[in-house]
Image (cartoon, rainbow, N blue to C red; front, side, top):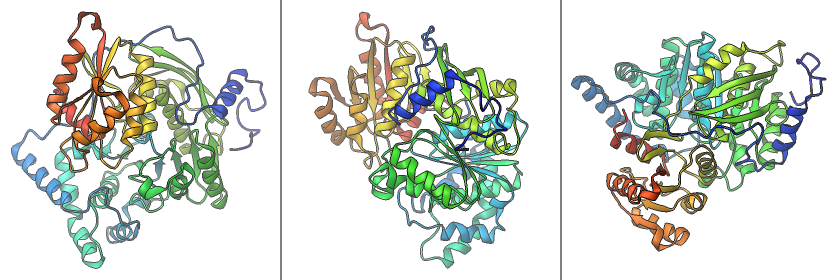
Length: 506
């Protein structure tokens, strides 16, 4: 796909609009660029929250007890941040389970930011074309069952429990044969692949946990590999530059696959292209073979025109905020086109009406999600500097806050200074806090960094998240002239998930 194809519709036509986005995409900051195409005539207000698919605890006490027992057993294994870089254990589990991951085709997603939102969009598109989907994403916002979805919804607790019980004897068998027991993430991955085969699904949409080559998900041979924007995160495990991180992430690109490559830093793009050549994979690049043609702010989201591999799709309403979500959308669109062979094996485009319907249905909990009004409270799971900058850009664009209060609870292994610096221009004040997990950065330690970034007068410390939310809402309401004030809760998926529960979202 790196060269124009004669069978591609309008391949030789002059297309000024797309030529313009190619130029802008090529020159933009790879992490933050916004294609300023189209008018911005509507300023989004904080409308009512959308319906969502984040499950609550089971209503049946016995089911809840059984789910908690499974969660406890999984929690006794290595957590997601303790890794032994190998697919040996997960491959052994797949072997004794009869290779369930080979029972269906798959789309594999890696990158630093945007993976889950992109996975949700791919899932929505595939489902709109009457395919039964399985989606595996991480981490979860509120419930562990969110990680494994069938037909666009998390598996119910009973199915989650039964899937665990079904594979448990095989997990224990592999544990006994390996130097290290299967980790929390490896067992969940095995559960997902088994659940998808049992359903059965027509296609699996799989997000890596971390990296690519040795990630537990990488026992699939996906026909489509998606690479969302790469930036610095997990540098202690993946590398200190985008290029080094891309080397690890390129491991999901398999022989003869199609690679959908979001806009990347130059060194990361070079690594991906080199790997594609080595395995004879076909590459489609954002800003070259596809891109966002135009974008207008709309009430409740944005209106897009997207150039895919098979042509242009206009009047697409995406009920998510931020330029980064528009870029995720076109990546998702091209991944589905590639899955159906459009742009390679067959000419033409997807049915535009079905594409519009699918995108209009997309939700992404914890991604610039409005959960309360008066004052407006927004949740966003940004947890690294690149994600924070995209969030700040999207928030400033979509909401007309006269004053914004931040609630930040971060993990100790993240670049918290970079995260705070990204938010400093848009936060009038920040309330630093911590979530309930062991990974959480101590609130006082976080406050010390925040004071260096914001100054003493703009930082408040509330170690308990409920107190932090109350303090931020009080600050947002304290003066009449700030009737348009808002609150952003951010810093960690876990912080966002706990805030959703405290604010009454189920």
